Image 1: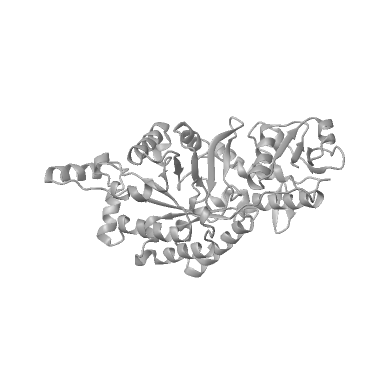
Image 2: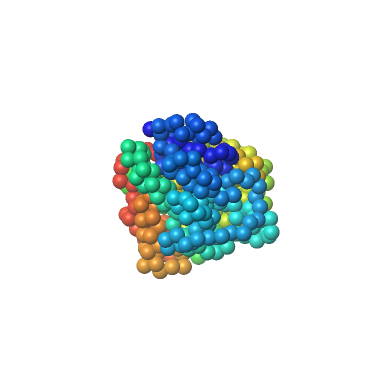
Length: 432
């Protein structure tokens, strides 16, 4: 038995969000039809979406959003649902709101497209509807999906859903260390280039060494890798390259660890690097230095602009992105802890870019005390475990060192692993 979904008009938006909820989150097989007689004759579990039910199937009343093919302003209405407000209220339906339109609105980041039409200012967490509705710290789409699962199984007890497993995957980022050349002339040329290049991170790293804030990447990386392996957790490493010739980049000592895992490009869209040529250059450099990394990933922890960043990633053959989140605020920017395919609202189509959302960053935790850090990590981890989702977090490698300055963050990271570590060895084999 599978699900059969009826709608008089089957738009790309309807198919996208129904597939995400029922296939990706709930792991069920879905059939779509606009043929009412075929739907009524079917022996499968029936769901209809529209203005009125056809018979006695599970009926969900629709709002306007999923039948549109434009990104346009509209008056947002809400209704109280449990502890928070929810959008797109409807009547004569199994739920008091259009759960599919609400999920699509949040997942597609519809409001951010509207926001960027008006201003070039950054879109912060406090500007989002989820923040206003007090649901930012919950993977609400996954929670709503479980609610739909219960509704279906109550009506169709024989219907079976495949079981999911909770997964934790931290992402760890750092800048590849620099190899200072030998010889007075070469050293002089190297330092002049570093000073004159505004995009270079070498001088700040040098300053960290002088002030004692620097960490030894070659020492910390193997320690962290070993600790994660003991928890059956496979991280994703995101690296950025200093803007210097490849001969001065010291990645060879790290390649053994990096090549056995998943490595991606850090900050592919920062500053003027939104130009696709520079994204491609970064990807090319990563492939050259780590040729075993076939499936390329990326992460942007600064300003994430829609749709330019994602379009440039697709044009650069990047297939997986870990940028969906707010670097300075804990929570679920896209309302989910399940990886999803990015939906391009300009072209109204599903793309090949797989998006993975993080909900915790060391930046967001840095100004908190240890108890506050544990509380936030605990609440977020519990919410993801409840829906058997994927718990993604983002950390700078130096935050995980034993340096006194980063002790609080290091404890938070290790608490996260103890609180919500993968238990099944099979998960250790999983790659993104």
